[in-house]
Length: 473
Ligand code: C2E
Ligand code: MG
Ligand code: MG
Image (cartoon, rainbow, N blue to C red; front, top):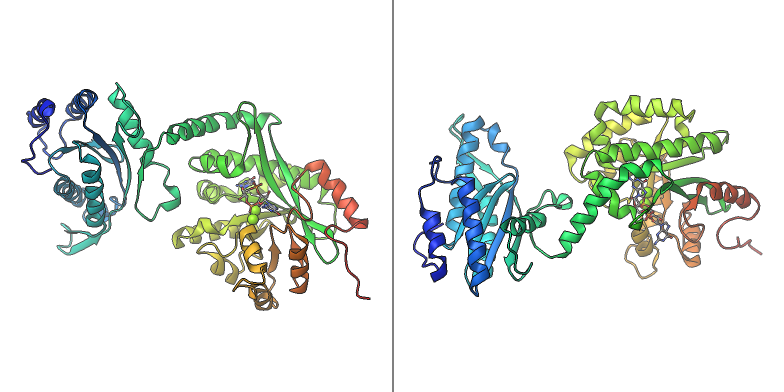
């Protein structure tokens, strides 16, 4: 942070504190943490008293570990030194920084602090994205691209006046987390008070889920997979439903990401697999056709269990007397947008297939791995998701010819195509016209409780699902 900016009157004391000797630690870029905390308390006290603003940002610094590779601890220290130097150059003198676990905390004050802080962050992001240093090992100049996640707030605009400095920093930190979806891009996010509610809710969800397994509040429902030419049910997708005691029904799209952020996804997936394989053994295994129940499998489950996947799944199948052929793993393709991840997952899926389990690609077309997984015969079913279905079936869509083309492309392979999200009769007819065989959707059935699925399978033998079958006159 460059010297020379005149601080606001009541903040002289803070300036003096910032410039005071650091005590027992003398490494300049990282002043002692207690001193930083004192400065923070001080800053808050003054901002509460004078009509000026504060800026608090938490910077999560990513990819830094790469620097070890080019010269171990020494290179790492050099890169950190470079990051700190650049940060000091980007922010004016009314900002200071502290060291926190994911990276840096930046604090600033002044009437223009919001625009100053934003401009500095944008500059910092650009400079860190193209950072270079000389490797102490090889003497070569190495480019490394550091990305940052930034959570920031403007005080008191974003959270009102607070007495406790820890709260302000907690709020800044809250905004810097939860970026999993963007892990290969840097992001900035401003604090909103809704984040507090969201984080409290997520903590509650993570806490309650263990109990839910033991109660009936969490159960699987099954959505039939229909052969639309005959109206018969040829399989079903298992979908989780959670009616939590206090919060009421929680959508899978809300709570699964919470479980995925930690190891809880393993227990959760095992819970779903246990339910589904038991159900399959009792109700599906005796069927001679290739009736299968599919289960949605999170990427992080496959990552966490590693090679243990084979004993885990084979023990489960054995314990529940379920043949592997009754089970299908649905893999959301968008979760494998990074090649390295896709390779690991592919290996995991091949292990599962050894047990007779099949694999389908959910949300086909949304991610990196689709073609590889298909070309190498790992996945044998493609599922087109609800939104894609809607757009490719519309006559006005430039993608109108997509399904017939896809069908022709896979005609000589063993790949099956399932179209999801069929809600209306015209969509059903369009699918028949385009020689599509398999579909799911509200038009045929909503997801059903286990017992109801069995009834519907029987009923569909006599009364085909979907609109009446038109016989040519
Ligand atoms: P998905 O696997 O693509 O599941 C299809 C979703 O579309 C389900 O939502 C289903 O209820 C809904 N759906 C089915 N037919 C129609 C239709 O005609 N129109 C519309 N608009 N929607 C339809 P749901 O149950 O809320 O699940 C959402 C997502 O949550 C699933 O997407 C899946 O990715 C995930 N999920 C659900 N259950 C589980 C589970 O047990 N484990 C894991 N890991 N993920 C799950
Ligand atoms: Mg699915
Ligand atoms: Mg789907």
